[in-house]
Figure 1 (tube, helix red, strand yellow):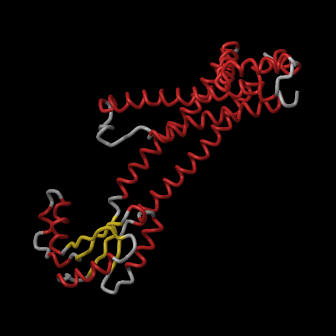
Figure 2 (cartoon, one colour; figure 1 turned 180 degrees about the vertical axis):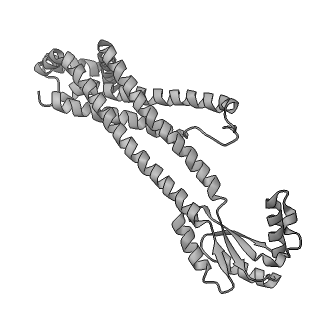
Figure 3 (tube, one colour; figure 1 turned 180 degrees about the horizontal axis):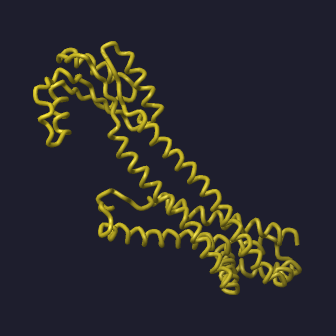
Length: 315
């Protein structure tokens, strides 16, 4: 029996899988301690990389939240050239409610439209003196369900609404809806692109860090191979080392961002014209934070695996 096989069996005998796991983690931590400066630099660089991604994600999450609030104000307004009596309104309301995407309907008479017009003038109401309410059209204000507030869905809904004979004109702020959806799609694409570049950068950093670690321990690795240690037995501590680097980098990035975000939310009111807390700004949701940490671990694993494939498998 070779000494390598004896060593593995001895470790397994003392605690089975738990014993092997403890050994691999001790070996990984020893690797990190022996190359402390290099590993610290790697973790700092990974932290900065994930900080950029998490900051972008924080901005995107709050923009999405703001978009949902703004989308609630999106409404389709159908205008009529005359007042609707109660019977006509009920019939028309029931018909529009059958259209897919309709959430609620409110009728605005010509008199109510004049009241709203006067309130918007703010101190210049006298300009409307003598102007009869009949000059303004009556209308139906239609709110759409959340799933039907994108530009394409609104346009399809308006096309169906215009087919109703009594409807004179339909407005819904199409330009604003289109621009906002274009902006959010651009943010999603930019985030995916940025995340891809950051992931490649982190892979490169971890891969080169593991290369340096393997090079510094090349004699020990060669000795383990000579005494019969399997490639998996040699590789696991290095894989754990890379995963720990990715894990630490992602967690540190989130902690730094959480601290900065807390300071901003609690003190930005002193130098901004609005209160961030009242504006509804939030931190990254827990599910997104967990995804970032998992991504850090995964990228660390892949980076280590790439380096090991070149230096251990081909040795």
